[in-house]
Length: 327
Image 1 (cartoon, rainbow, N blue to C red):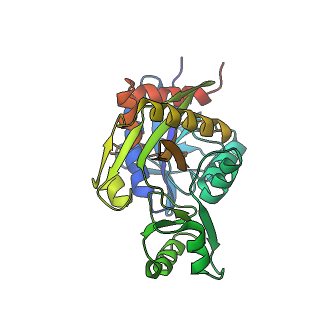
Image 2 (image 1 turned 90 degrees about the vertical axis):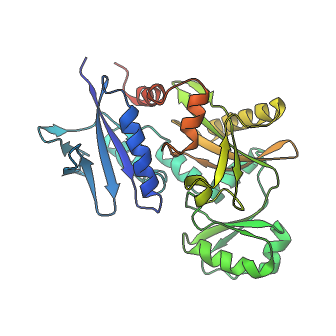
């Protein structure tokens, strides 16, 4: 049987592009080369290119997502989408590929856009009874009433950009004089922000993926940050412990897994998604969901995959087989 052409699309236009390139390298390394021809594709602000092993760049034809591989013109059979942030995690790339009829491994364009918009995602899930922190929304140009904000969310609270990842622009605020600088910092990342009550408890992260119609929940990871919260340094510069499996009770573990699966179904996810929770007084409170979670060597999903007894090659094979047309 002829090998399928798989473009591994990485990079992106956000501050997370470097992490996405690391994740993409792990995908290329672990995709089964006996089944697939694997093409690393960098989508960056300075251009879209297939990057060959000798670092030669071949531009992508945006009319049909084809490229020259040095011998012939390739149109991918499928795209392994591992962009974090814009345009691969917020629906833009998904919509473009759908118009071209090229399947891709992560959530659909609407589901990606909804889940990337933290405020909209929380609003939907709260209506289904998912527990979340109290929150207050602000847009750039709104009048800022600090007393009203604190009346709603209290101290400590988190100030977050609405559409950014890897904890860029996030601050934990303990007192009134920290609030306005934190709001300004968040507005540097996005014109929409949210301010949330800081939940007190154990932070956990759990991956979920589909294998055809079956939904699989991975082992839970407990996050212990040396910093005030699980920020960029904690995520990528070793300033945290990520303990898999999490040191939580069996009952708490069951509740988290059930909630993660419920959220995956409610948001109509596909591919790998990773949900974050704080367990406060024995109950999981949802923080956010990542539809293209990191798969670099430092990332949480590879640790959960290992703990589950699978290999990354097996996972990536499932994700690609999910979307390839069945003959």
